[in-house]
Image 1 (spheres, rainbow, N blue to C red):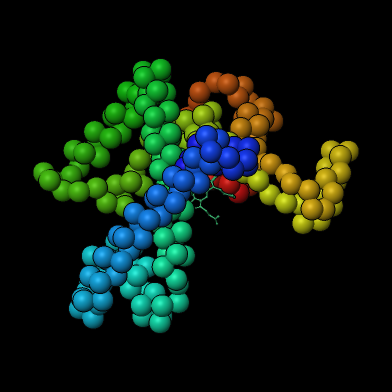
Image 2 (image 1 turned 135 degrees about the vertical axis):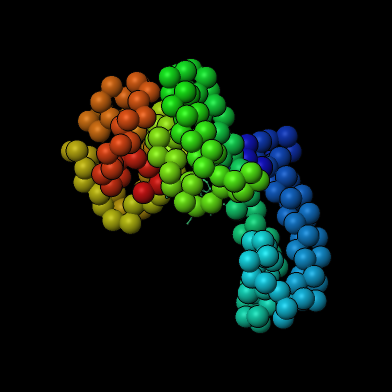
Length: 217
Ligand code: HEM
């Protein structure tokens, strides 16, 4: 399904687009079965359930049932597909490139390791990480940010000009499709001097709006 996202939209057997549509149908059918099963479970225990124990699907189902089936089953499945799709490749790409960068820059790796060890040492045996610990991971986060800057997980997205846009001597007429590019923004030497250089210290300063956009603006 993911491979067909940016494909030529010709729906003939054997095309990437056609395979993506079939894959999407397959996933939706599987999720539909899951939604029906879960709905029964949620209905059975809806009045005596601890909200903290709910996962995303349970929560969505509970809200839907309480609101009088405000979201159709098809829509629910659509939301789950969107989340799985939006969360999976982005996160796995980010982790993969992060590991590659840590391998490539041993000095960076060492500093990340020390920061992580310091946090690990502050925990009791078996105690889990919490939000405060994550906030202490300042250097590690700068490394993740720099990794997403140079190897952006999402290369951009499509928009439609809602009005005539005049920029840099060009006009984009209202109604035209535009593509906003993460990569060219992240490689702009005006905002990131020597953009090819891997340097997590760039993120010690807060970036201006629209300058660092791995998640969009
Ligand atoms: C490193 C990880 C991630 C990156 C780089 C990333 C990047 C992006 C980008 C570039 C967009 C498009 C924004 C736009 O069109 O303006 C987007 C949208 C979205 N992302 Fe992520 N994402 C990541 C992880 C996740 C995760 C883990 C989830 C869910 C659990 C998620 C859920 C979504 C959703 C639901 C949208 C659509 C929002 C909308 O259209 O209003 N993303 N993401």
